[in-house]
Image (cartoon, rainbow, N blue to C red):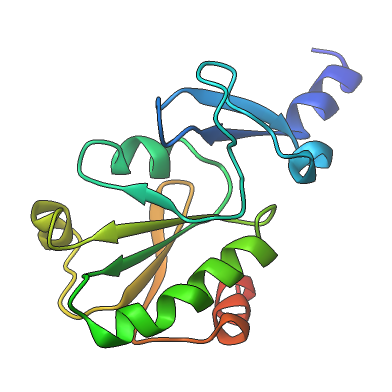
Length: 151
């Protein structure tokens, strides 16, 4: 492989479409250009949290090279509802830095149990398909951005 080809492949990121689960390659320098899924045409990084469930969770998290921040929540949870606008704001602000997703633990109880979700809201940051860190409790958009950017 030539140096130019190697450099070009390093500049590409895999991003799984949460709708059709197709893995798309997106150039790093084109992340802010609202890339679309090559299969279904849906925006890949639209700046809004994707809804994940037991059907698509593993495929999206494992096949996306961006960090994936998942909010585990439930509709009856007051702190979850209070944090939702802040999570959406962080998703807009950090759209090219991380994939944001939400999992309704009432509808995905098996997934919540498998991941050891014992309190909500719980946020888990996945890197390369593996849990990197987690925190329970509501955060504002600024605190959320700092938490995501911390190594």
